[in-house]
Image (cartoon, rainbow, N blue to C red; front, side, top):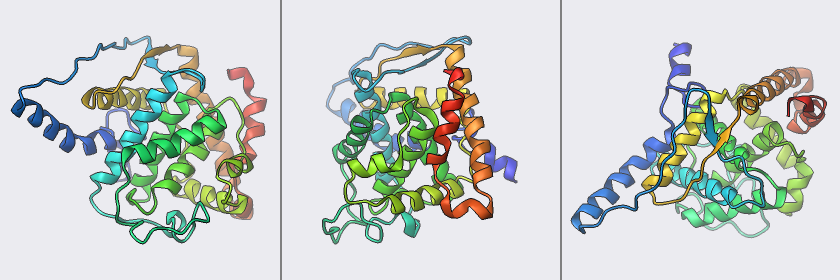
Length: 290
């Protein structure tokens, strides 16, 4: 039974369809129907294909335009998750009213009013720009987000999306990005949140993932190409750049290394102080993989 659940989980298994692409299909069908009724055709986009020896991805830095395209597509995936959710199952640790990110009063309709895509994009773009995160990190953020929703059997909805996305970014940036980002750094960006709150949210996120932060290159590639499909369906640009075999091996090696460390840190005697900040030294000591 557990094996079947694993194989149906897109964040673990390369053959399983991504959740966000499935969520977007209702809107895509409506758009296509509208194009037919209005006798217009969607903008054609140039495609690149991958070969057995090459994985294509956007490996840009914060100063390059490809990051903007990737973040825009990842946040569109989050938007479709919220808009086309089946229910609104959530957990208190991600509830924005119980754990606000700002001192501003939380709106009365915070748990029912779906955010627009541009609001989600601005939130994520601010974090990525300020912390100087990469496009690669944005894709891994989406993998961790879908893994959380599957493992915890919960939904991303208006009242919890900011904290879920923030938790996924926290984890992805520490595991995957070469530049170390500490929780206190995010507190400089989101000035009203405390380090204690960040640590607590991160600890819950890790436990809900069952400390599984491994992202095989095949899973990463699937998410990349499904994001590419999402971009094409919504007339967004999504440039491709090749990922070398060496870089693909690094993706798997780093995630396995950090996963083992997380499991050690997850022992009962260490859980109170559990934070991915403890992994930054581990990643530095294995910089030879870069």
